[in-house]
Image (tube, rainbow, N blue to C red; front, side, top):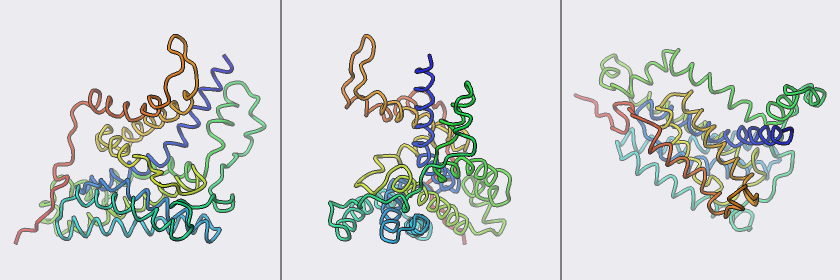
Length: 324
């Protein structure tokens, strides 16, 4: 029983770690699409943020400088997306996919030019990474039944970015539903004509939304390469940007449900890592290829059978043309 309890805690602990970039990217897509700008480019921005964070952290030895540069790089990609889709009213899906393709090729090319090791970065020293934090009293309380292991294994031992991510969830919810900016942001996604009639710039609101999304993607990318990992690896996002979009749709563009979906996807990812090489009763050892597919199969099943009726913001993906 104790072994089963510890396995559960360790899986839940891994779920919180793995969910960090997913939650950040899903909240980024949520903010962008609430302003009616589809952001398929979450994957590319996360990958770009991961590369810049790891590269700058390695070259300077400062993980904070790496984080700042990752955010700035993703802000530039967000501005590029906004320039194509908001200013020039281009196809938002095409623009996002273009960002994904360009970054997927550019990041390893620059990595090879700088480090000459197949497009990856060298392993980062501890001083250039976000290391796990041990909360006060974690070791002293470890022996306390039930609550001790929960505090020591599940709550303590995460990086600063993980704690900041979960603190950010109510902040984003408050921003969207309790502030004037959030009201205008949601309004521009539902009825941009009414917002324009009120004398508020639709374009400026949408630019701010994509910039918020860009900043969140920068933190998500930095968490991949300097917190969860210890270097940049080619294609290390592995579809997490698309999983974040799926979580946002599953959550029906609401922060709480979106985060719940991210935790569910992260749980399946943590579970598949623990199932590799394990012999299960009646089944035996499942081939590793099928286990790796588990998070993506779960995504398809949830979206196909459990998400129910989905109603996106009415103006989502529709360029706004100001009437003269």
